[in-house]
Image: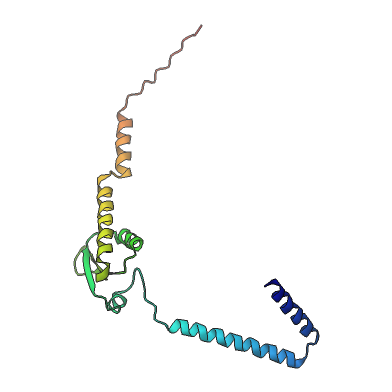
Length: 163
């Protein structure tokens, strides 16, 4: 491998010493042919259909012809669910329904992702329940403020001599 690199380097140096107009023309034409081949290769890879994963639009989800189901979420903190759904690798689409006064969210997902989605929803609900059970930091702070205000502090100065 190393010898091949050295030989190519040596050949380039030798032909570089005999640099002519024809050599320049040939080098430019080879470079342009290389760029054209790369461009065609890139175009072919771009033309291949890419199947989206994770969060996508309802149209993209329906276009995969695998059946679509939905679940309704009324909680406005949909970002927590999206993080968990990404963790479980679920293909989903979120649609906000503005017809009701507190907006509802419809989560569309593939029918084959039903098992993964149920486990994602159980984790989501467990997190919501844990969050509802623990008191907020502001509530804790207000309790401690009340304790400090009602605490009696002995602030009598004593001057005693120790021997």
